[in-house]
Structure formats: C-alpha cells, structure tokens
Length: 118
Ligand SMILES: [Zn+2]
Image 1 (cartoon, rainbow, N blue to C red):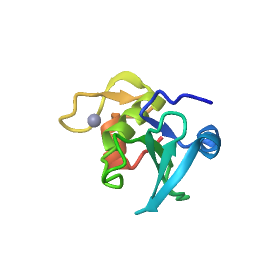
Image 2 (cartoon, rainbow, N blue to C red):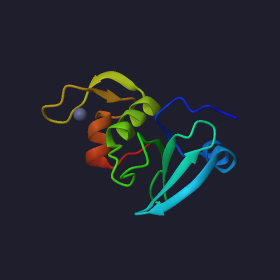
Image 3 (cartoon, protein in one colour):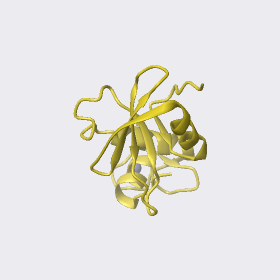
Image 4 (cartoon, protein in one colour):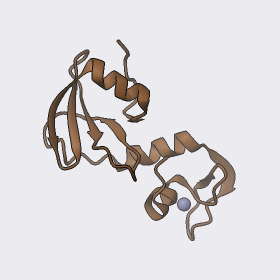
C-alpha cells in the first residue's frame, strides 16, 4: 500500500497501477472518473484517457459535485514543480513571475496561453 501525500499527480504508469490495486471506481461522468481510495476513503478524480492531453489524478475534498471541482491551480502548480523555474523573468507583458526552465514564460502563461501541461 502506498500513501499519496500530494493533491495532484500525473497519471503515469505507477499511478495507474496504484489506482488498479488500491482504488475503487465509483462513477464516470463528463470525461472524468471518480475513485475512492480503499486505504483512507479519500476521493480522487482521474481524467479520461485522451491521447492529446496529459492525464491527471487529483485528490478531491469530497465526492459532492465531484465533476465541478476546479483543479486548475493544482495543475499549474504541478507544471511548475515538474519543470522547475529559472532566474529569468516571464516575458509575457505585465507578468513578474519567473520563467520555467528552458522556457521564456512562467507556468501560468505556459498553461493558459500555450496549453503546456507537463
Ligand atoms: Zn507569466
């Protein structure tokens, strides 16, 4: 059994394996799947497979309105953590965040304007 300590993960092979062994599928709706962690009864949401998009696995506060939960800020934070930031400033006009490593823009603008997910 593995404890998931973060609120969001990329649904890579390890996470998908973990879901299979440790989670129960509760519902599928609106391009999401709702899972319950058998270990601690927490609820998690997985994106349906889409070959053009990165799949995320997100911890929910509860199972109520589970398709509505807004996880965009978590996705942006994960992008930042995954890529890391450089000492250069984002070149987007009016933005004073640091740019992501080997990019000219920050995680927010990479996510919102360029569609970068990972
Ligand atoms: Zn920016």
